[in-house]
Image 1 (tube, rainbow, N blue to C red):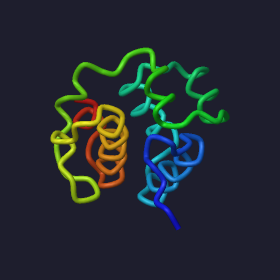
Image 2: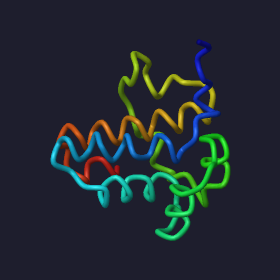
Image 3: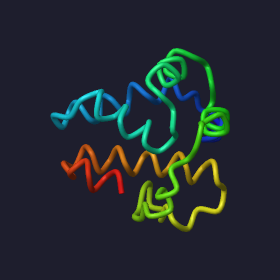
Image 4: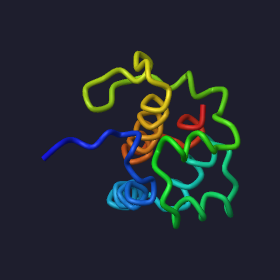
Length: 115
């Protein structure tokens, strides 16, 4: 089976996994949403449309109102790769989001997650 390109993955298919990961560790959907809104600039209504829609990650990030200027402060390893060294901007943004959700699930304080 061929591997799916991360750019082509549907945000609406991955979002429930973010929520499940957070909830397994005692965190909430509201906290996941706060992280996504911080990173992308989506408001509540626009984020809900994306959750219910069919946008792939490339479109999700391309249509984001603004990527937070402090996103470049996100450092660390996700899936064995340092996020700050990823050259493809879309893949880097997806991995930034993955990293932030991981930090939430590990119990990091929200004010530290939202740099």
